[in-house]
Amino acid sequence: MLFHEEERATTALLEAYETEKPNSVLTLTFENGAIYRCRFNTAFEDELEDASIPGGYDEFYTLVYEIVETVSHVEGFEAVYENMLCINYRCFPICVLNESGDAIYQRR
Image 1 (cartoon, rainbow, N blue to C red):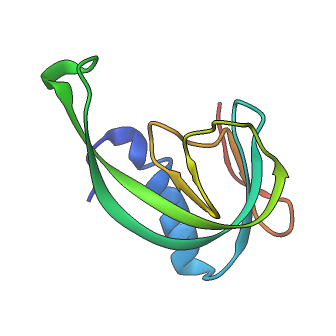
Image 2 (tube, helix red, strand yellow):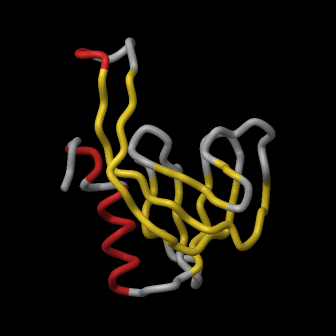
């Protein structure tokens, strides 16, 4: 289920890749400079109360990845929880590479 149109090109894209090529290790690069090599773990529907958005409430899809290697860590990066990385359309990498180095996703 998609809650936002931008999820089609972000979280839905990565989940479809996992279905096609299970257990792949992906390299996720974020705008803040953090880079992690990760393996898909799970996905779930999430929600957040946020006074800055219309209605004050947001529902979205979250993907959880197990971090297998930290290439570059940024202290205080909210998406990291111990050895797990949680991403959604609100906090999505600017680039995702597969094991061959090919771009699965590249922010335009």
